[in-house]
Length: 393
Image 1 (cartoon, rainbow, N blue to C red):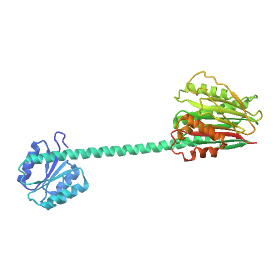
Image 2: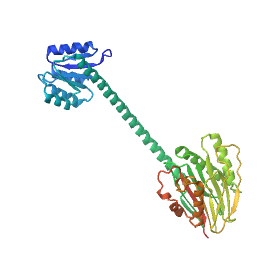
Image 3: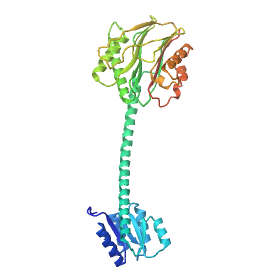
Image 4: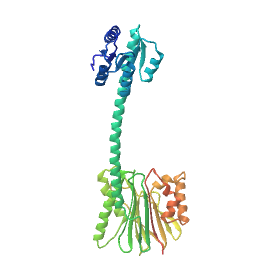
């Protein structure tokens, strides 16, 4: 198509005088006009060149104008076809418009500006339809690429979740009369909450609940890093003859390793050790909230943790604290994602509900899950983690 012209018009007209007048006028108006009198040849030329506008007489020898119109509009909805006729035949007009004609003009054409206007509008409509088709095709291609990217992302997240699940310990573990039970409910495929527990000696058991800022893949990567660091500390401990486990030392070592990485993430963590021989809980908290609840023979105590989160400040020191344990005790730990799904309005009301729950003797994981309706949670705004360590003598 010649860019010097306003557009290309295929003129199918067998009356010589009419066709010459139309061609001359449109050519003078800046259009490239291809005049073809044979309808069979005209259809082939249209298929090869796809002009913006076709002007076609209704009454033609060979393939009649309506048949040509139907062939064009059946194959392509972009080409604009203007039908012309010497007969003021209502049926032909209606049939033309029904078959998809853009306009219908009567011969003789007294005012060629009317024809020029119809052609100009046809060219504009053609180009708009082509533009819309191009945009649609580009959008479809982008959607295909987006869907493929989403598929790959989903595969990556599923693979990451598989790795993360393998790093987690069993949800339920019994060490003699000590029971450790937990649940993690991720808001996405991957969780920024992480739980681990381990045996230190015959009478000592360590554990932690970590909550990385944010959620999703970036937060989950930090939990994997945390697991690696904790394992390294445990291995050093196993090689040591003293086997002195300090939650505060774990937090300080983890903070020192996280700071240089500049991950843009920080984490709250509650780390503890149960000594069944001494009946003691040694713990250290780094900004963990809500406070863990310690239930000793029915008495409930909230364990405040005022330490700074890990991964933000250099040179932070942490301190171990110790609490006595009764023969029957339960230590209930929750991540702050639980607060997001609780119906109470204020944080104070939510903390009061959790305290009341513990006071009423709801200490096992199934009871807590049921009371907080966590089994029904779907699409939570934040990851949710629960860890309960208990002993019943």
